[in-house]
Amino acid sequence: MTLIDEYKSRIGETRTSDWLLIDQGRVNAFADITLDHQFIHVDPERAKAETPFGGPIAHGFLTLSMLSHFAAQCMPAFPQKAIGINYGFDKVRFLSPVPVGARIRGKFTLAAVEQRKPGQIQLSHDAEVEIENAPAPALAARWLSLVVTG
Image (tube, rainbow, N blue to C red; front, side, top):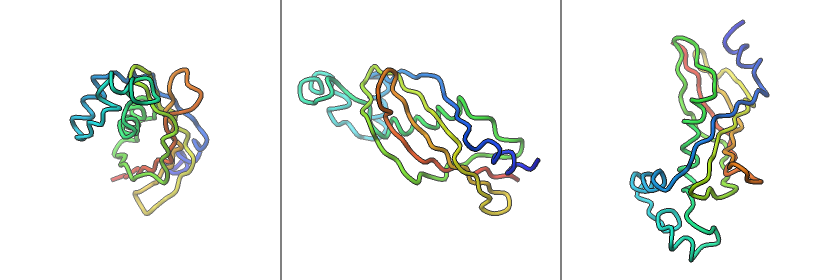
């Protein structure tokens, strides 16, 4: 079986990561790295008093950035002499805020596989970040990656 045939046989397969706590320290560190110190993320008292969220929420881009961590936890390893490269997104939607103190996890369903050129296979995953005990996910995205073989 060729590598592309192996990936095509996995279309529709869903994998889910472990839960991860989004605490204030992680949110503050992300704010420092991105220089995004909006009060809804980093000022718990003000966020509780002045927002409809009841307290601080994680940055949407923090939630999005966790996809790499979640994928590394639950996706199969790339074959020997192959690497995975982030190719981008066809669509990203932030559906629900992630309250500080909540746990989130990633869910990935392989949606499509295509040969881009010799040595490059594009994988398209429908990705979600779920919030524990929440009715809707934090985000939904179509995530594209390339498997590059040498």
